[in-house]
Length: 274
Image (cartoon, rainbow, N blue to C red; front, side):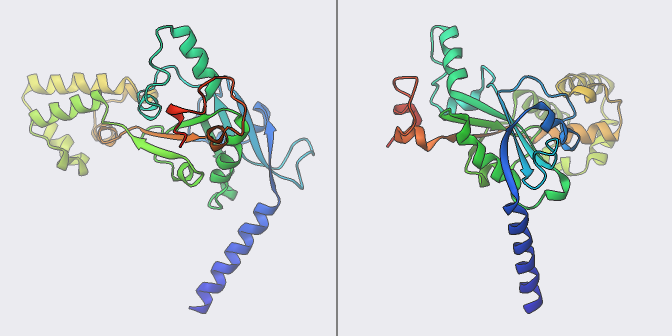
């Protein structure tokens, strides 16, 4: 028992020691690129609104080395159903689309990427990056989305709230088709068995399922041309249960009126001022 307590104390001291030497600085594309290979999205970084880097202050300044984490903020996408739910349609109710987009771009920023150097993971640094940089964006509303069904607990630990959306229509349509073919959701736990069952379908029904499988995969980039096989069936099944997760944060400074608004009603009504 004492040994376990000692190990926990040692781990806590190590975490504190590492954290004490880390600072968060405004950065740029070069700092993000130092860690880009560790991010699960392998696409190149597009336009961004701001980048912050978490650095070891003992190395920062020496050609800007010592980067252990980075967060990228981007401009928001124009239409997002779950944002409309959270904001009570604040950005969707304009008769003038141009004015609506202008207000959206003025008030909202999207967390598009967060990456931590693997040796520093497990120390709560991703949550710290989010928590300490959101107020620096100087907007009342920050949002993030779970990509490909990934739930990001560090976002909630950083103070963001979350809501889940419904199963996407394209997934619901495919689930319904499989049910009509005699394959129920309870069977999805065994992709190999599902694939074997697909092989026993009547040719016409099998052709319909194949068409819908290919149609479903069009949303998944490099996977869209996966050949027929157990691997493809397993991949599709893994996507059918996904529900989009939307994370959001209202800057309490704007709610209190501590920060000056460029919009007359920014601190009232739809932003939940009590």
